[in-house]
Image (spheres, rainbow, N blue to C red):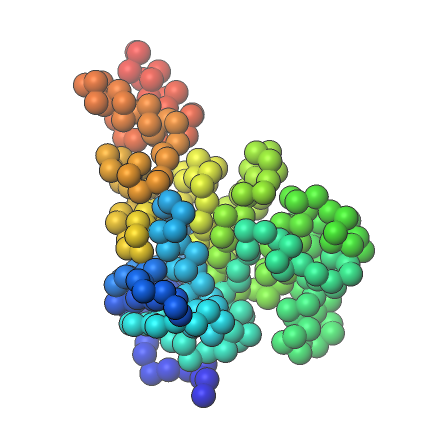
Length: 292
């Protein structure tokens, strides 16, 4: 029996909450996630970082309902989205709240035209035709891919496919957008373009964003938090400057942006430039001030 309502009331601005949460996949001896306690608030842009196998993707699947509804295993504790226990909500209903963009866009675009692909989720919800038309047009326009509406997805570049996948998710108007390594198949220029779109969705539309991204230099200066994971546990959680200044971060498979690494190297040599820079421009400004 599934329900979209529960008695719990979320704290002010709380949108996602993990409470003593652990998960072990069916057939596995050890948990992939262990005793996760985590709260994410509305409007945040959160980077999840860590080496392969640390539990990042499992954490994301636990937010959008793929766990426990599609990936079976043993669950302890709970995950709530907007105060609703994920285990008690059907995945199709949770999709109205949480949008998920996969690492490989081929996993979520499969119709004969871009337009039909973007409309697919809306049609499954049984929305009126005029509402579907309005949302599809809005989403295509937002991502600047209106000219691709009648194209077949298989004809598109990887960057265009990723935008189409994102458009289909945004057409559902979710409160939370989850992206699992969305730039892994993209060249640096296209990756930067996609990340700029994600940052715009967060800053201008107020969409809460959770992103797993190895190229953290592309987005870290706009992140409200960085959560670093290792062996299924949250090891570091805080502002980008706080997390990236931790000397142990490399042990968790996370590489700080070059400006931050250079700052830390100089600091170890007794040269302080001030707060940890997250961008080249911040580093240049600090050096100029030091020289003067």
